Length: 302
Ligand code: ATP
Image 1 (cartoon, helix red, strand yellow):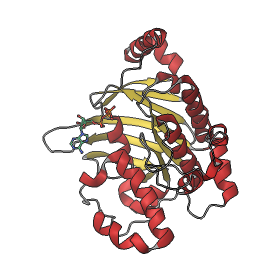
Image 2: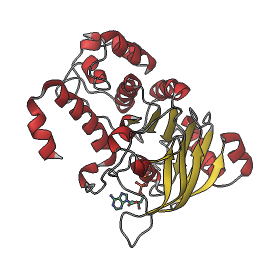
Image 3: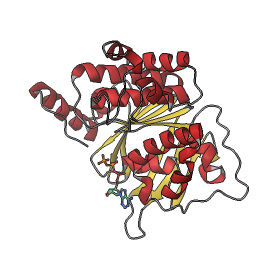
Image 4: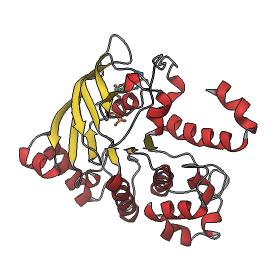
């Protein structure tokens, strides 16, 4: 990774674009430990995304040969659906995202985007079709406007401002000393977890990919930030197929589908109402979080 990185240092916007994209993805997936083992098929076509449908077809996967992490995962996501993935820590939620990005190949089964097996398309075209909102966003020592522009480096100021509005960041920005020109990052203003995640949402909205993956921050948010994130997420999922790893069940109540994962399998699947009625895993998770909320303590990280 560093070998690619350093020579690009002087290449102006190319560098900026790379850095933005890489920092986001690196942070989310810690890909520095991902071996560059995945190569494009020799005749790899570009992924043609018309709708943004996703299918996991009996996917088995392990990082090592001696331990299977996903053990026959099957689900489909219709175009523009919002699907939430919940489950205990270590259940395999982030692994689903890594496989969708093809950081690894499945051991068995397949993953299809709009009917195309992702092993048959170029990784570049696959990753262009997917926007990421990571748990913890890297902010550069630049203005908030430039930080959002990383989503699409040639975007106009108007487009950046529109993304900022849709990401519910405008009220927050109005209170800053220099508005959108306020410097943020390590040497600038420090943003809270919720504000940083909204910067990531604004970046992703600017990129406007047909598929969006959202890894909800586990850090505790005050109810104002949480509402902001929820509204921003609704903006994202209105037009794009959206997969959310959700830690707060408040995020999933309006999802079209909720996948409950346990030990590498999808053990329950349905809408919030259906899963509550089913009285299983999800229903007890929901009751537990309701109790925690009532007691006003942080939700358990999942
Ligand atoms: P969390 O909510 O804590 O993020 P998760 O449901 O997203 O958990 P994953 O991160 O997908 O779970 O991890 C599933 C399992 O795979 C865990 O047991 C984890 O230790 C293991 N795992 C994750 N990444 C790697 C890796 N790069 N190499 C080996 N094992 C890994």
